[in-house]
Length: 263
Image (tube, rainbow, N blue to C red; front, side, top):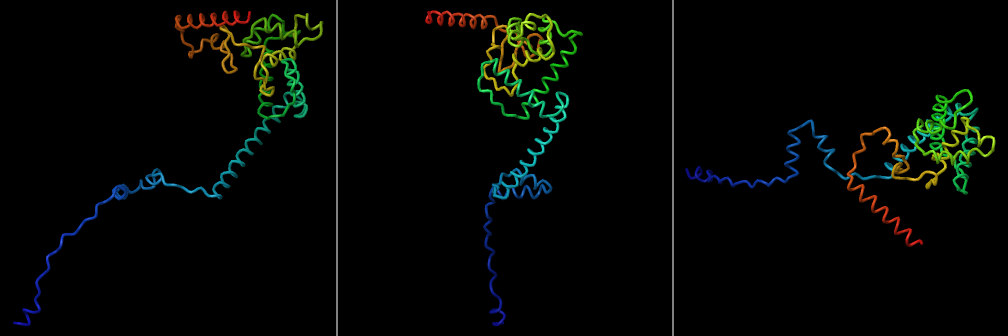
């Protein structure tokens, strides 16, 4: 009996277990584990910091160079195809383009006539020239285009100059007396007048003295606003007559003050 009493020991009472407090990241992790298939989406938008190594930068540079090279080659092939419409080969078209840019800069008083060939600017000039020639062919007769029809021809091309501006450019383009006093204009001269009034991008004309923004024919960022007025574009809204009156009165007051101080 003594041996049995010694062998039997009192049972120890179970101690209460301390449960750890779960953090917010563990809660989100448990939720994601329960969701299952969307764990990849959760990891993508979690915002982990990614280290950009030299190899990654090199890979990005190589990919950009390949894409830019491919785009430039496609543009050059497109220009080669378009050049056949304007001349026998690309060299002849570039020479014609450079001579036009020189004449336009000379007429506008720009003495730095150095020309650097840019494929985008060359393509812009070829597209405009082809469009002008197409519109001229629709209005000309067997002799050419009458001088009185130039205003309508310019409007069909998307430009809205005044008759005075057309007359001034006419005197610039037609140097000889036989052409200056003629009532018939040729296709080359009409297109030359258009490019003189509206120089191509390759001329890099910042301040065009021939075209000035006025109340009736505003020019905003190099774009004529009169074409929106003629076409009745929905972007136009009816102006408040009070605001317009204040603007006109302030402009007239500033002009009179400027004339007073100059005199």
